[in-house]
Image (spheres, rainbow, N blue to C red):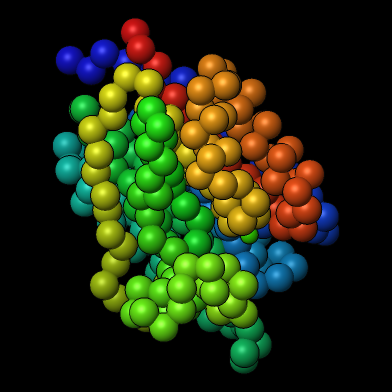
Length: 245
Ligand code: CA
Protein backbone atom coordinates (compact mmCIF):
# COMPACT_ATOMS: atom_id res chain seq x y z
CA UNK A 1 0.00 0.00 0.00
CA UNK A 2 1.11 3.51 -0.72
CA UNK A 3 2.22 5.16 2.47
CA UNK A 4 1.28 8.66 1.46
CA UNK A 5 -1.68 10.99 1.40
CA UNK A 6 -2.23 13.71 -1.23
CA UNK A 7 -2.38 17.39 -0.41
CA UNK A 8 -2.76 19.88 -3.25
CA UNK A 9 -2.10 23.57 -3.67
CA UNK A 10 -2.82 25.72 -6.73
CA UNK A 11 -2.48 29.35 -7.70
CA UNK A 12 -2.74 31.51 -10.81
CA UNK A 13 -1.99 35.18 -11.45
CA UNK A 14 -2.88 37.36 -14.41
CA UNK A 15 0.37 39.30 -14.02
CA UNK A 16 0.95 42.15 -16.43
CA UNK A 17 -1.35 40.74 -19.11
CA UNK A 18 -4.77 42.19 -19.87
CA UNK A 19 -6.40 38.79 -19.35
CA UNK A 20 -5.54 35.39 -17.92
CA UNK A 21 -5.35 32.70 -20.61
CA UNK A 22 -4.09 30.10 -18.13
CA UNK A 23 -6.57 27.62 -16.66
CA UNK A 24 -6.09 25.11 -13.90
CA UNK A 25 -8.20 22.18 -12.72
CA UNK A 26 -7.83 20.42 -9.38
CA UNK A 27 -10.19 17.44 -9.14
CA UNK A 28 -9.55 15.79 -5.79
CA UNK A 29 -12.36 13.24 -6.29
CA UNK A 30 -10.68 11.60 -9.29
CA UNK A 31 -7.21 13.03 -8.65
CA UNK A 32 -6.99 14.73 -12.02
CA UNK A 33 -4.79 17.84 -12.20
CA UNK A 34 -4.40 20.10 -15.22
CA UNK A 35 -2.71 23.33 -16.26
CA UNK A 36 -3.51 24.77 -19.71
CA UNK A 37 -1.94 27.91 -21.20
CA UNK A 38 -4.03 29.32 -24.02
CA UNK A 39 -2.68 31.21 -27.00
CA UNK A 40 -4.16 33.10 -29.87
CA UNK A 41 -4.73 36.46 -28.25
CA UNK A 42 -7.80 38.19 -26.90
CA UNK A 43 -10.58 35.79 -26.04
CA UNK A 44 -9.21 33.07 -28.33
CA UNK A 45 -6.56 31.85 -25.93
CA UNK A 46 -9.03 31.83 -23.06
CA UNK A 47 -11.49 29.89 -25.16
CA UNK A 48 -8.89 27.26 -26.06
CA UNK A 49 -7.60 26.74 -22.52
CA UNK A 50 -11.19 26.85 -21.25
CA UNK A 51 -12.15 24.02 -23.62
CA UNK A 52 -9.16 21.99 -22.43
CA UNK A 53 -10.12 22.58 -18.80
CA UNK A 54 -13.70 21.52 -19.50
CA UNK A 55 -13.09 18.51 -21.77
CA UNK A 56 -9.94 16.83 -20.45
CA UNK A 57 -11.07 16.16 -16.84
CA UNK A 58 -14.52 15.07 -18.03
CA UNK A 59 -13.18 12.56 -20.57
CA UNK A 60 -10.64 11.22 -18.07
CA UNK A 61 -13.39 10.76 -15.47
CA UNK A 62 -15.67 9.03 -18.00
CA UNK A 63 -12.88 6.71 -19.13
CA UNK A 64 -11.83 5.83 -15.58
CA UNK A 65 -15.48 5.06 -14.74
CA UNK A 66 -15.36 2.31 -17.39
CA UNK A 67 -12.24 0.82 -15.75
CA UNK A 68 -10.07 2.12 -18.58
CA UNK A 69 -6.34 2.28 -18.12
CA UNK A 70 -5.42 5.81 -17.01
CA UNK A 71 -2.74 6.12 -19.67
CA UNK A 72 -5.31 5.42 -22.37
CA UNK A 73 -7.76 7.78 -20.66
CA UNK A 74 -5.21 10.60 -20.83
CA UNK A 75 -4.59 9.95 -24.55
CA UNK A 76 -8.29 9.92 -25.29
CA UNK A 77 -8.91 13.13 -23.35
CA UNK A 78 -6.13 15.01 -25.14
CA UNK A 79 -7.33 13.77 -28.51
CA UNK A 80 -10.92 14.90 -27.88
CA UNK A 81 -9.78 18.30 -26.61
CA UNK A 82 -7.57 18.71 -29.68
CA UNK A 83 -10.47 18.01 -32.02
CA UNK A 84 -12.82 20.36 -30.14
CA UNK A 85 -10.31 23.23 -30.22
CA UNK A 86 -9.60 22.73 -33.94
CA UNK A 87 -13.36 22.78 -34.51
CA UNK A 88 -13.85 25.93 -32.42
CA UNK A 89 -11.04 27.71 -34.27
CA UNK A 90 -12.00 26.81 -37.80
CA UNK A 91 -13.60 30.18 -38.59
CA UNK A 92 -10.56 32.15 -37.51
CA UNK A 93 -9.09 34.64 -39.94
CA UNK A 94 -6.23 33.20 -41.96
CA UNK A 95 -2.88 33.36 -40.24
CA UNK A 96 -4.33 33.42 -36.74
CA UNK A 97 -4.07 30.34 -34.66
CA UNK A 98 -5.92 29.30 -31.57
CA UNK A 99 -4.56 26.69 -29.28
CA UNK A 100 -3.45 25.79 -25.82
CA UNK A 101 -0.80 23.85 -24.01
CA UNK A 102 -1.86 21.19 -21.54
CA UNK A 103 0.01 19.40 -18.81
CA UNK A 104 -1.90 16.93 -16.70
CA UNK A 105 -1.44 14.29 -14.05
CA UNK A 106 -3.91 11.53 -13.19
CA UNK A 107 -3.54 9.18 -10.26
CA UNK A 108 -4.78 5.61 -10.59
CA UNK A 109 -3.95 2.94 -7.99
CA UNK A 110 -0.28 3.44 -7.06
CA UNK A 111 0.68 5.17 -10.31
CA UNK A 112 0.55 8.76 -11.53
CA UNK A 113 0.27 9.33 -15.28
CA UNK A 114 1.73 12.56 -16.62
CA UNK A 115 1.42 14.02 -20.11
CA UNK A 116 2.25 17.38 -21.62
CA UNK A 117 1.69 19.14 -24.93
CA UNK A 118 3.33 22.46 -25.67
CA UNK A 119 5.68 24.10 -23.17
CA UNK A 120 3.81 23.80 -19.89
CA UNK A 121 5.81 21.43 -17.71
CA UNK A 122 5.61 18.79 -15.03
CA UNK A 123 8.42 18.38 -12.51
CA UNK A 124 8.97 15.64 -9.97
CA UNK A 125 10.93 16.72 -6.90
CA UNK A 126 12.20 13.74 -4.90
CA UNK A 127 14.75 14.55 -2.22
CA UNK A 128 17.54 16.45 -3.96
CA UNK A 129 16.52 15.24 -7.39
CA UNK A 130 14.52 17.54 -9.67
CA UNK A 131 13.30 15.91 -12.86
CA UNK A 132 11.33 17.48 -15.69
CA UNK A 133 8.83 14.77 -16.65
CA UNK A 134 7.61 16.45 -19.82
CA UNK A 135 9.37 17.51 -23.01
CA UNK A 136 8.90 21.08 -24.26
CA UNK A 137 7.31 21.02 -27.70
CA UNK A 138 9.06 24.23 -28.70
CA UNK A 139 11.12 24.58 -31.85
CA UNK A 140 14.08 25.62 -29.67
CA UNK A 141 13.91 22.37 -27.69
CA UNK A 142 13.71 20.36 -30.91
CA UNK A 143 16.90 22.14 -32.08
CA UNK A 144 18.59 21.20 -28.78
CA UNK A 145 17.55 17.56 -29.22
CA UNK A 146 18.98 17.49 -32.73
CA UNK A 147 22.22 19.12 -31.56
CA UNK A 148 21.82 22.43 -33.38
CA UNK A 149 21.52 24.57 -30.22
CA UNK A 150 22.92 24.19 -26.71
CA UNK A 151 20.39 24.39 -23.86
CA UNK A 152 21.81 27.80 -22.97
CA UNK A 153 21.42 29.07 -26.55
CA UNK A 154 17.89 27.72 -26.60
CA UNK A 155 16.97 29.82 -23.58
CA UNK A 156 17.66 32.96 -25.59
CA UNK A 157 16.44 31.70 -28.94
CA UNK A 158 13.56 33.40 -30.77
CA UNK A 159 12.27 29.85 -31.26
CA UNK A 160 11.84 29.29 -27.53
CA UNK A 161 8.19 30.27 -27.60
CA UNK A 162 7.25 28.80 -30.97
CA UNK A 163 5.41 25.55 -30.37
CA UNK A 164 5.18 22.70 -32.88
CA UNK A 165 2.80 20.55 -30.84
CA UNK A 166 -0.16 21.77 -28.79
CA UNK A 167 -3.93 21.32 -28.49
CA UNK A 168 -5.63 22.82 -31.52
CA UNK A 169 -2.82 21.68 -33.78
CA UNK A 170 -4.06 19.81 -36.84
CA UNK A 171 -0.73 17.98 -37.22
CA UNK A 172 -1.03 16.39 -33.78
CA UNK A 173 -1.53 12.93 -35.22
CA UNK A 174 0.87 10.92 -33.08
CA UNK A 175 -0.76 11.94 -29.80
CA UNK A 176 0.95 12.68 -26.54
CA UNK A 177 3.55 10.73 -24.61
CA UNK A 178 2.14 9.56 -21.30
CA UNK A 179 4.72 9.05 -18.60
CA UNK A 180 3.81 6.99 -15.53
CA UNK A 181 5.70 7.12 -12.26
CA UNK A 182 5.26 5.50 -8.86
CA UNK A 183 5.05 8.19 -6.18
CA UNK A 184 6.99 7.87 -2.96
CA UNK A 185 6.16 9.52 0.34
CA UNK A 186 7.76 12.97 0.34
CA UNK A 187 7.50 13.51 -3.42
CA UNK A 188 6.30 16.82 -4.83
CA UNK A 189 4.80 17.08 -8.30
CA UNK A 190 4.63 20.53 -9.93
CA UNK A 191 2.53 21.38 -12.98
CA UNK A 192 3.18 24.88 -14.32
CA UNK A 193 2.82 27.23 -17.26
CA UNK A 194 5.88 28.83 -18.86
CA UNK A 195 5.10 32.14 -17.12
CA UNK A 196 6.36 30.33 -14.01
CA UNK A 197 8.98 27.90 -15.35
CA UNK A 198 10.85 30.64 -17.26
CA UNK A 199 11.70 32.23 -13.91
CA UNK A 200 12.07 29.30 -11.52
CA UNK A 201 15.22 27.15 -11.41
CA UNK A 202 15.77 23.54 -10.40
CA UNK A 203 17.49 24.88 -7.27
CA UNK A 204 14.38 26.88 -6.38
CA UNK A 205 12.33 23.69 -6.62
CA UNK A 206 14.83 21.61 -4.63
CA UNK A 207 14.94 24.15 -1.81
CA UNK A 208 11.26 25.06 -1.87
CA UNK A 209 10.17 21.43 -1.58
CA UNK A 210 12.10 21.26 1.71
CA UNK A 211 11.11 24.69 2.94
CA UNK A 212 7.35 24.65 2.27
CA UNK A 213 5.39 21.86 3.94
CA UNK A 214 2.03 23.26 2.82
CA UNK A 215 1.58 22.90 -0.99
CA UNK A 216 -0.83 25.85 -1.13
CA UNK A 217 1.70 28.15 0.54
CA UNK A 218 4.40 26.90 -1.82
CA UNK A 219 2.22 27.34 -4.93
CA UNK A 220 1.48 30.96 -3.98
CA UNK A 221 5.14 31.57 -3.20
CA UNK A 222 6.30 30.21 -6.58
CA UNK A 223 3.86 32.45 -8.43
CA UNK A 224 4.96 35.48 -6.39
CA UNK A 225 8.64 34.78 -7.06
CA UNK A 226 8.07 34.45 -10.82
CA UNK A 227 6.27 37.82 -10.82
CA UNK A 228 8.96 39.45 -8.67
CA UNK A 229 11.58 38.22 -11.13
CA UNK A 230 9.81 40.00 -13.94
CA UNK A 231 7.44 37.49 -15.48
CA UNK A 232 5.17 39.48 -17.80
CA UNK A 233 3.06 36.42 -18.56
CA UNK A 234 0.18 34.71 -16.81
CA UNK A 235 1.69 32.59 -14.04
CA UNK A 236 0.09 29.33 -12.92
CA UNK A 237 0.99 26.22 -10.98
CA UNK A 238 -0.38 23.20 -9.14
CA UNK A 239 1.65 21.51 -6.40
CA UNK A 240 0.74 17.92 -5.49
CA UNK A 241 2.34 16.80 -2.23
CA UNK A 242 2.60 13.08 -1.52
CA UNK A 243 2.88 13.46 2.23
CA UNK A 244 3.84 10.57 4.50
CA UNK A 245 0.79 9.11 6.24
CA1 CA B 1 2.30 31.44 -21.03
